[in-house]
Amino acid sequence: MAGVKTHTFFVDMTCGGCSGAAIRVLTKDNLVDKGNIEIDLDKKTVVVKSELEAKELEDVLKKTGKDVKFITQT
Amino acid sequence: LGTNTASTTLNIRGMTCNSCVKTIEDTLGKNSGVKMIKVSLAEQTGEVEYYPNRITPQMLCDVIEDMGFDAFLPG
Image 1: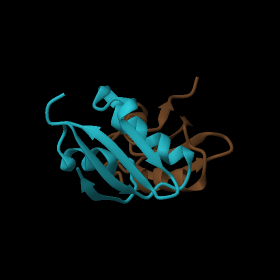
Image 2 (image 1 turned 45 degrees about the vertical axis):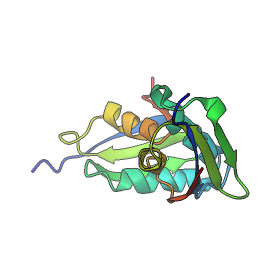
Image 3 (image 1 turned 30 degrees about the vertical axis):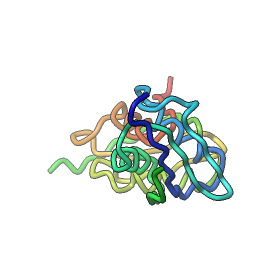
């Protein structure tokens, strides 16, 4: 897939339910495939492999009502 | 301005801790169509007092679904 980047976000998730919500908003209308999402509850990070721009992914993650900050994109 | 309110109890799935409850209450609380919301983690429900001329129970479910949780009307 051309232009796929790995985006890392800080998302203030505190439990499984919150990370489940983050996965659900990302996979809604199959925006991102579940296999391209990695969540680390301890580090409170969400790593997404996608062609979408970081800004768009950030806006989607913000729908969870959680504090979201863009960290890196490789 | 229609200040009469109606209330409904929605079923909410996907919450597993109080911070999920608080997030839903905060987000819905800020919605202009919502007067009061009380979410029960134990019951997996959300009791919402709303302004029927501004928002409908189905729209309330859509807002919750938009957040990444599942919500559906009772019955």
